[in-house]
Length: 380
Ligand SMILES: [Zn+2]
Image (cartoon, rainbow, N blue to C red; front, side, top):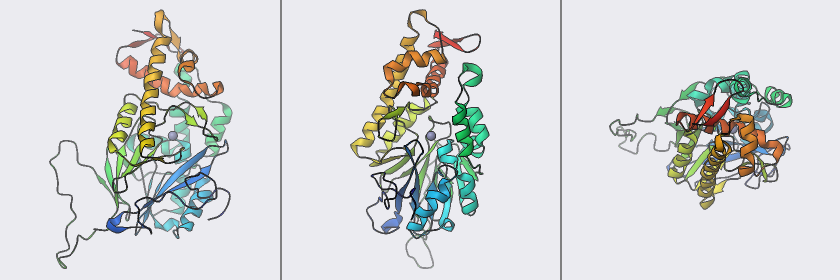
C-alpha cells in the first residue's frame, strides 16, 4: 500500500493501514466461512471522503462500489495489494447506486478485473452505465420543470470523474451473494413456500456439506436515495453496508460539520428503507461518507434520518400555508430555515428531497401542482 490516497482505518486518516475488520476472527476467513469486511477510504478534493468496501473471503473477494474514475488505480489496487490480493481475486463487484462517486470507477474496474461479475439494482442500471444519463436524469432532472440546474463546474466535474462500465447482473428485489465465487441467488419470491436452503452433503464422504465454508451475504433493495440502491447485510458479523441508503440530517463535510442536505429522492421508499435497516438490528452500519456506526450509534443515525424526513415534510406543508403557491426554488428558500444545519450556499441541495416530498404529497392528494412552468405547488 502506498501513496497519499491509501487505505484508512476508523480514524479516516489517509495512508493509515487497514481497516474495519469484523467477525472477530483473525485472518481472511474465520470459522464457518465468516470473512472480513474492509473499508477503503479515499479523500475527496473538497475535504470529504468516499469509502468503498471489500469483502475478503477464503477464496475470493467482493468489491462494493468503485469510487471515481481514478479510484481503482489510485486507491483500490493498493488496498488489495496490502492484503496480498490482486484484481484477479475479485469475484464480484457491487455498485450500490447511481452516483458518480460510487459508479465512476466501473470502467477501470472492468478492465482491471474482467472476470468479476458486476452487479447493481435494476432501476439504477442505465444511470450507472452512462454518466450522461446520470447527469440528464438525476443531477440535472430539475431543469425542465423547475428551472433549477447544476453549476457548470459540477457538470464538468462529473464528466471528468466518470469512466463508464457495464453491469452483468441486476436485481429488483433481494438476493444472496456468495463471496468466494461471486454467484448470486435470488431470494424466494414473497409468499413462496419455505425451501430447504441447506447445501447438499457430500455423499461420497458422508462429511459436512460441500460448501460449508462459503461466505454468503444478503443483497437488499433499499431504494430512496436512488430508485435502485442496494445494501449488503452480513448477518454473521452483524454488519450492514448501507452506502448512501440512509443520509441522516445532513451530509458531513471534511471536519464532520454539516455540508449539505441529505439527498434522498423517493418517498415513501426512503422511509421504508430506514425501517428495513432498523429491522436488521445490525451491530455495525457502514455508510460511504461516515465513520462506521456501531451499536447505539447506528440506531441513532437511523432515527435522525427518519426525523429529518418528518421535519422537512412539515416545513414544506407550512411553507404552503395560508393559500400560498410556490415553485420548487421558492420552497427551498422557505423550508431551509426550518431544517438546514449546513451553510446557506448549500441550500440548493434540498431540491432532491423536497421534490421527493412534493411528489409523495401530490400522490397522497395533500398538495397539487398548478399548470404552467416552472411548476408551482399549493395545498390541495
Ligand atoms: Zn450517493
